[in-house]
Length: 507
Ligand code: NAD
Image 1: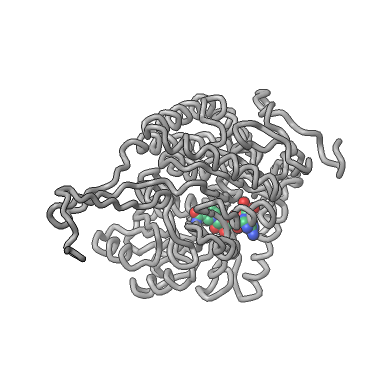
Image 2 (image 1 turned 60 degrees about the vertical axis):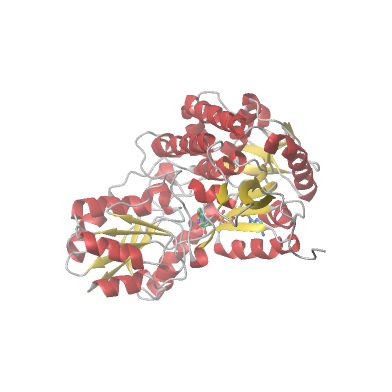
């Protein structure tokens, strides 16, 4: 046993654990020790055992990573775009080829059930790298029809060194959302994964080195937010920060970026409204609404965490919804039967559970869950039962992001009422609605304040479709052409085609 009574570092069941990268940062194409030798324990949320220790980057390590990225920039940005794309396509193939091992790594590090890690996280990650691999040589500038005798073209040039800061909830996928467009556009990257779930990102870096990405193009500095993250956000040689995380830290990122007026893109918190109208296909709405909140234990910025149900169907909907929620199989993420795993850390589990008391204090009624499960095999882990709470739209649990398997339920009388409730938080990220009425669907989609709306589904994402929010959910977009715009600057070039002499000061 290691210090603190925890078990020794574990190797994955198939022995595929990342031999060369334990305890290392990835800087300049090599796995290196942190300068001061500091490490971070990485725990398995299923039982809080120690998986491994990784190196902890501090300011000096971040500086080294930024230097490496700056040195790599001329070569990488100067490569034919198709060559950059080819490497991203190879990475996509490699991820698919090693899908099982990557999924297991993600499952033990984050608590994602292995079936989701394998079929969703890994597959979406490969799809994202493939999309941007294909995008690299198709994203192009434009020609502006200006006055006669002149040619004006606009090329899209990479920003330079970009800093990317990632949260703990979907590390594999979010890494691809950020690296894919940044690299396709010709930027070089310093990425700071979450200190809680850094393992799959380190494994991706190892794959990149094996595939032949030039050294320094991607650098990984695992570290704490207040030290490594803050330093990266402040760094004068970093041209853009792409941040995914909480709204509070997003504000700090904006402040930290001011020194050199960095471009900033923020993917922040959410409080997804999920409206069920009285003409909805109830079976689909119940099932989809459960997915909206309980997938990944509700630890998703786009989670449908506020159910807003028409009063006519509320009783029937809730009867079915509670029955489904209480039948969800909680368990070890590595068990293929598991439908919901643990939350990512003990601290976070306790925070989520604290919202049950907060709900009750304001008159909320717990309809399901509201506690840690009692099975002995789950007792050491960070589990929370699927929790459904009837609450008023103004209650704290209806306004604050709980970020767990915790959904509030409220009812409405007419469409205007539904929209008013849906738009009553400071966030504006994901949202959903269930109806068979086509014009109602489009009208509500138009009027709901959100970056994404799902009609008769929830939580669909695709690398071609822009992802991001409004209000306190941030600004800028990931994925699609929007992301390519966000990772490039427009350069406008004027050519005096007819060699006209300017009319001013003619003598
Ligand atoms: P967090 O804000 O605590 O941390 C996110 C990242 O920022 C981590 O890597 C952390 O180390 C780093 N960080 C912390 N303090 C920092 C600082 N002062 N300077 C620079 N970096 C710092 O968020 P979290 O708890 O890891 O993730 C959960 C949050 O992320 C939720 O609010 C969730 O809604 C949000 N999120 C948003 C999206 C989206 O796309 N909008 C997606 C996933 C998660």
